[in-house]
Amino acid sequence: MSPRFQPDDKLYKQRNTLKVEYVPDNIVGRDNEIEEYEAALQPVINGEYPDNIFIYGKTGVGKTAVTNFLLNELEESAEHFDVDISVITVNCDGLSTSYQAAISLVNKLRSPENHIAETGHPQSKVYRLLWDELNTLSGTVIVVLDEIDHLTDDTFLYQITRADNNGYIDNIQLGLIGISNDSTFREQLDAKVQSSLCETEISFPPYGADELQKVLEQRAKIAFHPEALDEGVIPLCAALGRQDGGDARRAITLLRKAGDLARTENAETVTTNHVERAQEKLEAQQSMDIMRNLTEHEQLTLYALTTLAAEEATPARSRVVYQRYKKLCEFRGRDPRTARRMRSFLSDFEILNLTVSRKEHLGQDGGTYREHELTRDIATVVDALQTPISEFGAHQSIIEYLPDSGEEFSTLKD
Image 1 (cartoon, helix red, strand yellow):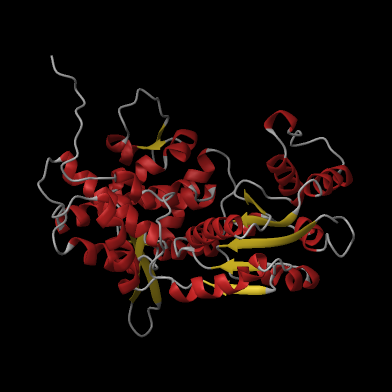
Image 2 (cartoon, rainbow, N blue to C red):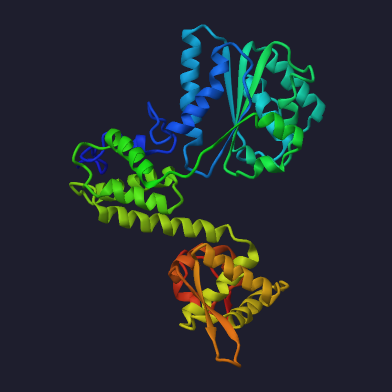
């Protein structure tokens, strides 16, 4: 009996190069930003004190990729010219306080067996340990704080950007690179921190369709065999990526998903049809993630509209949705939000492309009202709302859409 899984390289040469983590040997579509960034890093090779650099732009516009690429180049150049530099990177995703960020950096500088606990230390001790660790280094030290906007206070940023002026470090030249998905983050900082952190600011705008096409062509050449992609695949992926806000990660992921679909179907080439179907799958997954991350009362509002859709009672007026929403709340003793607040939830759903609404007029003296309906199929919404359904009960209208998982749901009736 032959093994179930067989090697398959008919389409792909190096599929891993379509992963987000992959950094190509050269970066395309970001020439202006790279030029600015290089100029900001040049003092390091000259042995001069580095500027602090603040990088900002939406997700998927190349901030981290360009940073990793240029810092790799900088370290290679430093080795060639015998310049002493160290680069320490901390991803702030999962860190919310300055205390957590400081401990994370201390542990980055220490060997694993000497890591300190994440809690239980006086703040003054944590910073003392940080200065001690930094002072064991020499030359230029660059600290990269990726997703810096996750930090909710700026004590850590104040401490580290003022460390030299305050006499905490004496053996090194310390530079900071902050990378943020939120362009307004710097505006929320204390004036002194903003001045120190943002000595050089570089904005990464969304990719245009032409730039995305260059990025995808570069990845496709490495990832796929020649002739594996139909002619329209790259332009379509680029166009859809541009519609999604110029997100290169999204466009690359779309290309990979299309390739995986083609491979699953044992197709000779990846076609635009594979791209279109991959886009539908990605949109469905994105919608699922959005719905699962809604607040409880947002989920209950969406649940209420879903039950009406299951009864074929949509488009439904706002007051009808509110009546159903109130019943769901009352079933578990929750205080419902006001009708106005619930209507704002419905407006937000439309922005998130979960629903569509339209304004109806009853004539000159009849006033106006809004009607709402889902843009996602009922089964998908029910799947995403498993948590509130299990807690508040399964409305009789959606019973047929529940997964056959053996889980018991109390049944809600009008």
